Length: 117
Image (tube, rainbow, N blue to C red; front, side, top):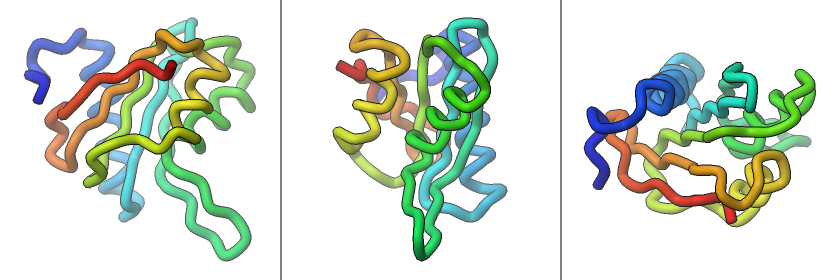
């Protein structure tokens, strides 16, 4: 488990935004990404009959659709203990293999930090 108070303030911010998206939308996961210009993109899980996307892939798609050229970091808040390879691949595609991805519980406590690669 990672001490959330020891996180960089910008990383704490994306965890908070991801947590808020999850709670506000009543979805299993919330996610936030920060692009290479410091802009943030926030999303929740998409579960439509014709479209299913994790919160993280949705946040990455929002960043791409808004013209982001790269990512600095990503955060996911939910009950899962790990991230799907497809989620990490989406972050890696835009941010590169070294992009940190923070995984936090629903209480906002960061459980692990992995890289996209």
